[in-house]
Image 1 (cartoon, one colour):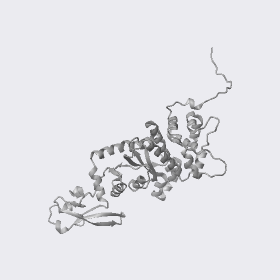
Image 2: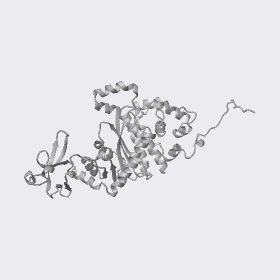
Image 3: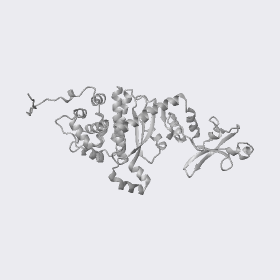
Image 4: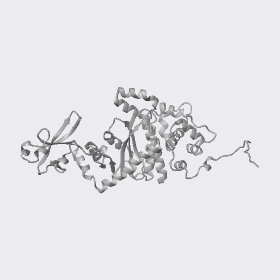
Length: 394
């Protein structure tokens, strides 16, 4: 006999909590992190009078769901939270209540949270929670930067062409961003996130980035893009033991057989003669200072190596970084056991984390325009991954 579904309405008492398994990611996050601290962080953004707003904890939790599960649009996020019981449980929205409209996010972003400050406060609070649980040791960190393109549709191509025609720099500012990030190599917790216009150089922003973190490291690993004397000196002044991959320079004195003596701050040629430090010179074309090491032409003219050592001015001189001693100290570390260890950890955790963020947490393209909005997206993406790694470790 063929069965047929009954169309009769029934009353059912439903307990959402009992329907979500204990090992569900959102339940684990809910058990590990109490998000009530958001009320304190959000208080300055709300008035003491007027009609009650939507709970800010619900708004932040919904946004986190979008980045945890790679839900690309807020309109789609509203639908998913409305239909998914686990999402409702995590946000604290029972079946009798309507999920906030997707337009609520854009309105709050435009008027209330327009400076993205609250998202950084929440990010830092989650990092502090990880430190409290012992998931951030502060021993070794890996920092790196990644270019993030804006999600520009094909229909906007005429606007893009016009932007490029106005200024390449303006184009880079509006249609691309540079995301700088530091990861603790213990459990892969992201401790620092900053976003800059894409026309900035990584080496110009790394020191500012490292100073603004809630976690201070003992040692830091960087790739060859940061191999600049000013960066090495800045890392030393921050009290960090830096390990930076080296890159080849065209005017490298070492290629001509010169050796550097750190104790006396001078170079030694193949014949054992010294090039003493003379002075700092400012170069207008690059707007940088460099250190001049030189030796009298009369002293070197009879040397058989004079032609290979002399510059186009017919003198024996070396123009080095203004912070060459720090530059040299980094070079000495290259190839050591500590250098190889830190570089391997940086490659695994820093580069690997960028890969995961782009693949799973909406970091492959910036959905909204503007530096503040890009910063907000980067912070939320990092928060999502930190929460996943937190519950895994705990």
